Image (tube, rainbow, N blue to C red; front, side, top):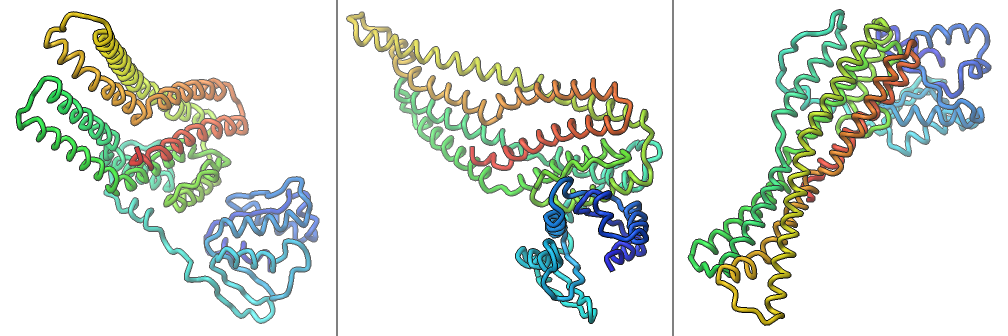
Length: 439
């Protein structure tokens, strides 16, 4: 009975993944020699074999394996006689765990074969986020690698359209927030000019009022515009598929996405995992060809990307730092001059000095300095510059390691380290960008 699920899946043309509670050498002790030969055949046809515990207690390993199966399933099918477990990790305990999580259940009575369904109201068929991404307009595919299989073609086409949507649909929220800061600084400057230069024209208060209304309007747009979530999801999907395409063809697909939990993209992650594993089994790439393609297109491509981003961010950070420093120093100088003039017996200052240095400057310059330092924070420049430099160093190290490896195992370890570093950068970007309206 315990082999029937795998045989049925294979007979239907479905893929299957084996979750072993113990290493195969230890696991085979629970089977006769004839049964184990059948198991080995089935394991050879599995798309992925995962061992839950290498050194744990036998009973604990069976329990962990069953719970991990429940954690990763959409629907649990259990053949159970309804009796309590005869040992730790038995069917009764796993069914109880699935019920506690309210997983959809199909329970087949082991004696009567009667079928009972539970929690089917929570069964998710399809996913609205993935359906929305799939519904994006297609983009011309361009040149594909020689010998690309159907799975690669599908993922490549999907990547092109989500990347196009993310690139052309960016809502530029940082620019909107920058506009809010600029409008507030302008409103302050108008108010200070009215007082310092005795500008009592009707246009001044109306100009200040328009600036304040404009800043409030932009802030409301940033707060309530929901287009940002679609854009972030498209960019995440583009980067995840970019990573998947970069490692397409590895004999043993590296499972990069298991540790990342991005709301709305779990179905995409699982689909990529299945397609990669099938491709890795049926059409593994030649070692030298794959390595050179990965170095050229992924490592060198990402190094060039981070270098470009750094070349843009560093001058921007330098300009904002200069603006903050100049504004702060001038504010200190103007305030000090005003304080000394007020304290010491000095001749009456010229009118332009009183208006510009004693009145306007000490009010506007601190606000301007605060604006500059706010823009540094809004654009996340300190972190971005440091991160770009760190990623360049890590990718350079990965390139050197990959250039000298001679085996698939060593290359997989280098690739896993590099790809997880790149995905971690995407994760940081996602965490910051998703909540940019809180600035």
